Amino acid sequence: MNRSCFSLSIAALLAMVVAIGCGKNSSKQPADKAIEIVDQFLEAWSRGESVDQFADPSRPLQGTDPDWKAGHQLMSFLSAGAKQSPESPDRFRCRVALSLRNGKGRMWDQEVEYDIQIGEKSVVRRASP
Image (cartoon, rainbow, N blue to C red; front, top):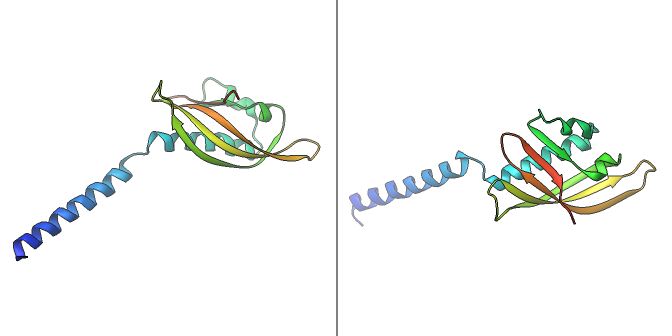
Protein backbone atom coordinates (compact mmCIF):
# COMPACT_ATOMS: atom_id res chain seq x y z
CA MET A 1 0.00 0.00 0.00
CA ASN A 2 1.49 3.34 -0.98
CA ARG A 3 1.78 6.22 1.43
CA SER A 4 -1.15 8.28 0.02
CA CYS A 5 -3.58 5.32 0.14
CA PHE A 6 -2.50 4.56 3.70
CA SER A 7 -3.03 8.22 4.73
CA LEU A 8 -6.41 8.25 3.04
CA SER A 9 -7.44 5.03 4.83
CA ILE A 10 -6.37 6.43 8.20
CA ALA A 11 -8.27 9.68 7.54
CA ALA A 12 -11.42 7.74 6.58
CA LEU A 13 -11.13 5.55 9.67
CA LEU A 14 -10.70 8.57 11.95
CA ALA A 15 -13.70 10.29 10.34
CA MET A 16 -15.85 7.20 11.02
CA VAL A 17 -14.71 6.98 14.65
CA VAL A 18 -15.43 10.67 15.23
CA ALA A 19 -18.85 10.41 13.56
CA ILE A 20 -19.81 7.35 15.61
CA GLY A 21 -18.60 8.95 18.85
CA CYS A 22 -20.43 12.20 18.20
CA GLY A 23 -23.63 10.36 17.32
CA LYS A 24 -23.69 8.51 20.63
CA ASN A 25 -23.13 11.59 22.78
CA SER A 26 -25.21 14.12 20.88
CA SER A 27 -28.54 13.26 22.52
CA LYS A 28 -30.23 10.63 24.63
CA GLN A 29 -32.37 8.02 23.00
CA PRO A 30 -36.08 8.46 23.81
CA ALA A 31 -36.20 5.11 25.64
CA ASP A 32 -33.29 6.21 27.84
CA LYS A 33 -35.16 9.42 28.63
CA ALA A 34 -38.25 7.38 29.62
CA ILE A 35 -36.16 5.26 31.99
CA GLU A 36 -34.59 8.39 33.46
CA ILE A 37 -38.06 9.84 34.13
CA VAL A 38 -39.42 6.71 35.83
CA ASP A 39 -36.20 6.43 37.87
CA GLN A 40 -36.58 10.04 39.02
CA PHE A 41 -40.17 9.31 40.08
CA LEU A 42 -39.21 6.13 41.95
CA GLU A 43 -36.18 7.73 43.62
CA ALA A 44 -38.49 10.33 45.16
CA TRP A 45 -40.66 7.50 46.53
CA SER A 46 -37.65 5.64 47.93
CA ARG A 47 -36.52 8.86 49.70
CA GLY A 48 -39.89 9.00 51.45
CA GLU A 49 -41.28 12.02 49.61
CA SER A 50 -45.03 12.51 49.33
CA VAL A 51 -46.83 11.09 46.30
CA ASP A 52 -49.15 14.13 46.43
CA GLN A 53 -46.40 16.40 45.10
CA PHE A 54 -46.62 14.54 41.78
CA ALA A 55 -50.34 15.34 41.48
CA ASP A 56 -49.57 19.06 41.07
CA PRO A 57 -50.31 19.95 37.41
CA SER A 58 -47.70 22.73 37.48
CA ARG A 59 -44.85 20.23 38.04
CA PRO A 60 -42.75 19.13 35.06
CA LEU A 61 -43.07 15.52 36.32
CA GLN A 62 -46.45 14.16 37.38
CA GLY A 63 -47.32 10.65 38.41
CA THR A 64 -49.13 8.17 40.56
CA ASP A 65 -48.62 4.68 41.93
CA PRO A 66 -51.25 2.74 43.93
CA ASP A 67 -48.71 1.22 46.37
CA TRP A 68 -47.14 4.60 47.07
CA LYS A 69 -50.58 6.11 47.57
CA ALA A 70 -51.43 3.23 49.97
CA GLY A 71 -48.45 4.21 52.12
CA HIS A 72 -46.08 1.38 51.24
CA GLN A 73 -42.38 2.18 51.41
CA LEU A 74 -40.21 1.59 48.35
CA MET A 75 -37.03 -0.11 49.56
CA SER A 76 -35.37 -0.51 46.16
CA PHE A 77 -36.14 -0.76 42.47
CA LEU A 78 -34.56 -1.84 39.21
CA SER A 79 -35.70 -0.58 35.82
CA ALA A 80 -35.49 -3.31 33.19
CA GLY A 81 -36.01 -1.27 30.02
CA ALA A 82 -38.51 0.80 28.09
CA LYS A 83 -40.41 0.06 24.90
CA GLN A 84 -41.82 2.79 22.71
CA SER A 85 -45.54 2.71 21.95
CA PRO A 86 -46.30 1.91 18.32
CA GLU A 87 -49.17 4.42 18.42
CA SER A 88 -47.27 7.40 19.84
CA PRO A 89 -43.54 8.24 19.74
CA ASP A 90 -43.70 10.10 23.08
CA ARG A 91 -45.22 7.18 25.03
CA PHE A 92 -43.29 4.31 26.57
CA ARG A 93 -43.86 1.30 28.78
CA CYS A 94 -41.14 0.57 31.34
CA ARG A 95 -40.85 -2.67 33.31
CA VAL A 96 -39.58 -2.26 36.89
CA ALA A 97 -38.85 -4.65 39.76
CA LEU A 98 -39.94 -3.14 43.10
CA SER A 99 -39.06 -4.15 46.66
CA LEU A 100 -41.74 -2.85 49.01
CA ARG A 101 -42.50 -2.79 52.74
CA ASN A 102 -45.86 -2.08 54.33
CA GLY A 103 -46.51 -0.34 57.66
CA LYS A 104 -46.39 -3.65 59.56
CA GLY A 105 -42.89 -4.42 58.26
CA ARG A 106 -43.93 -7.11 55.76
CA MET A 107 -41.67 -7.01 52.69
CA TRP A 108 -42.32 -8.29 49.18
CA ASP A 109 -41.03 -7.97 45.63
CA GLN A 110 -43.12 -7.41 42.55
CA GLU A 111 -42.62 -6.66 38.90
CA VAL A 112 -44.77 -3.86 37.49
CA GLU A 113 -45.00 -1.75 34.35
CA TYR A 114 -45.29 2.01 34.13
CA ASP A 115 -46.70 4.04 31.27
CA ILE A 116 -44.51 7.08 30.65
CA GLN A 117 -45.40 10.07 28.53
CA ILE A 118 -42.42 12.25 27.66
CA GLY A 119 -42.92 15.93 26.98
CA GLU A 120 -42.71 19.39 28.43
CA LYS A 121 -44.68 17.85 31.29
CA SER A 122 -43.91 14.16 31.68
CA VAL A 123 -46.32 11.71 33.29
CA VAL A 124 -45.65 8.36 35.00
CA ARG A 125 -48.54 6.00 35.81
CA ARG A 126 -48.68 2.36 36.85
CA ALA A 127 -49.91 0.42 33.85
CA SER A 128 -53.06 -1.66 34.16
CA PRO A 129 -52.30 -5.38 34.51
